[in-house]
Length: 152
Length: 214
Image (cartoon, rainbow over all chains, first blue to last red; front, side, top):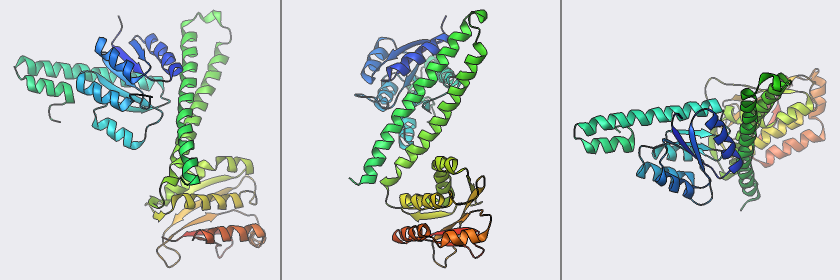
């Protein structure tokens, strides 16, 4: 039984396929998209727990994928992994609700820790949101799923 | 578009590409290690040697990533005409980018950090170029195996500019005097003057003072 689902989005095919293989060996259920557009299709078909996305890609870039994913699938945590990012990009990604912003090349141990922490956050948010929903406070439940913290 | 801006833009793009190359090398080496870890111990008699090679690849990827990060930062410098920045950080960056110069001449460069930041408002590219040119001038003529020490100074010239003292250990002061009388030194002085800065030797003739007007 795999621990949780990760969708990896990167136009560098050699990189993302190799990383996919390594993460699968570590008992996560992974899939790959080679563009932002393909990622949005896969999100619609089968939303993952965590989305690992590159920033600069032809067509829809990682920032747009992050923005759309946080809007339409607030339960999915997004980790950005980029070789192109500036500080301004990191600020913008954090404003849009990225869970973590990592720079390539990253050590696999660090990446695994980040993915697991992102999944843990997803579970915690889901549980808190569920407790609000049980009490009939659906607005708060929705807000938590969208923003991750009712007080934000 | 200015030449320097164009070079910076292309360099920045290429450093990004190189980060992807390094990431692919790292993951491919990692995958090879993963596969070896899963295989039968006796099936591959060179396991230790293999892991040692993988370790070297990993270390070089880290080294390459650091170089690319610094080069990327440097490539954006021509984008601004003037900026305020801590002179300590400027010196550290120049030293990092001068590693090849250091190795070629068998000398070390070292920055003596000041306790508080010394903020210089200048053209960042010119500042770096002049410090690098000074190191390039000194490195071949000082004693092999010695260390050139750089330290940012506050106001030293009676105006609101800032200076850098560059201590160059030369085994005898006559040598430095001779160096300072040569045509290369005159060319360096002119280069500083043409960029609105100045360079001179200290009273004891054991260091150079580089001055940038504010």
